[in-house]
Image 1: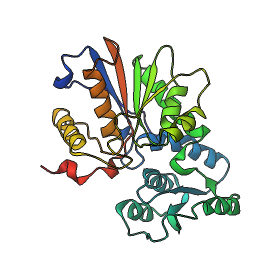
Image 2: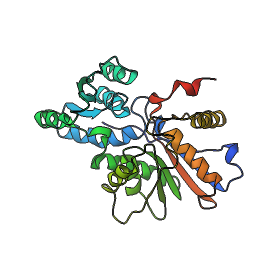
Image 3: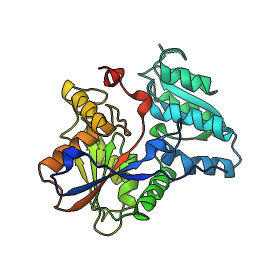
Length: 293
């Protein structure tokens, strides 16, 4: 049985927001599982079910050296009984290069390192082993991943009807699933974490109905993907001090939460609206700087 329990939906009762006419909730997908966390579980779930139903025993996927998707797929393989292979960008790397790759190897993932300039070679490898491996795309986004994120939206609607649902957007797969699962007048806002907005919009639009509108903010990128600033680190530390049961990280959830707080202060959400933010996990990539005093 490939199943994990639904994640909790919690009200954020931050004193900092007390004077603003907005109710803020957080969907705690970071609490789904200690290793298969956040949107990675949502994207993997129905791929794993499909692989099991089709009789596959091996999974193959792709990613960079710090990929949360590689981390989660390795864990899922161990937990649900699949062998796993990861094709990793960077022939100079090895299984001991960082904690993500060490964790993947520890969980039984066979790591194949490819030259960055010839990373397209992964398509040839995919075709070569297609009959033996169930292939999951880089980042995990496909139609089955969208189905998993829509299921998350259904869990939210089972409890409340939000006016806005907000999420960090890297490749755009989770945002696409959120948009696909919208009901009524609920609006979706993606907070881009990298500069290339030109790639993000079509990546999202590929999976959503043409009549669904959405917004992607590029105001809170803080340099580019994986980049940060003292301002962002200070915000995260302040947020966690006031909300000690919620940890963020600086690549995705910290940028999204900074953006939401800034929009609340600027009055950009409708008065008396209900806003749900999605905690997409990724805490394995949390900077040690956030724990420094």
